Length: 411
Image (tube, rainbow, N blue to C red):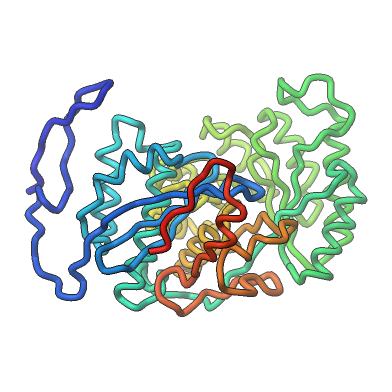
């Protein structure tokens, strides 16, 4: 039975389970699997988002790569957690994950930056475990359903509020880049706003958004699925009216039409319309997604793997969603590391619909790793190499680091 002890931090005193190998008496000889974590390092890359890359080192010379969600998981939090896993066996992924959750409970480990930081370490542990066991990461969570993962491309234009410009870009990406799934922002200025702070959409604003949807979907036709993102911008009533107006168009999904805090409103909006509603990137872990799924408050669940808790937590969410026959379309704004981690998870779940790609306009996204052609014709092939299957290009990482950052060690 786990031991209990009282820990003191600068702000509070609290009691928790200690799931370290030392207190649990886990000292069995594992032969070549008897490996210990020796260090954790981070570097932030200045991409189209700040990408926080994580490296976990072992005494076997095997290093794992991970990534935190761009809005969280800063270096200070990761370094705060490093002592909790140094000396531990990286193959004990579930125990180490729970160990970090419990040790960081005083800092709010159920959500926010802390769970994002834990996600980055958890991804790196899967990379290490795959390399030790000589299997791809997807094999660690049940094996694969598909050899490649469908990618949907998040599109942007210089004139994002111009319906014709959006339609032009959608058609270009489908024709020239080979994507058969795309997404546009719909929370764009229409020129008819009186007060954007109150979240209310006036009729001219709704007409403008409908015109974007109409021109894009008609121009693309049946060559691609098209989703639209609202970024939690509207009132419940405005979301109802907008979703109703979009029912006649071929909308793949309408994403985040209302703020994420109130599940009751989210459920009511979803159940009010036949326009498919997606949400999920702004809640954390399986517990955060539970009500959305159990109450049929969403048509498509959209967790962000480097934010929600990592690979295994995302698989748990997908398994819960599958009980309600709800597909998974992972949100993703990551570098190749976080994107591949999401692809590994997507390969291992039956209800994967698509995975987001947010860097099509960034010419050096793929330069961060040694592998080429990660995304081709709107698909990301899942490597058969051990772990995540990617190798960092340290020269490229150093070239694109955020000013003031220090490059982590190669080995």
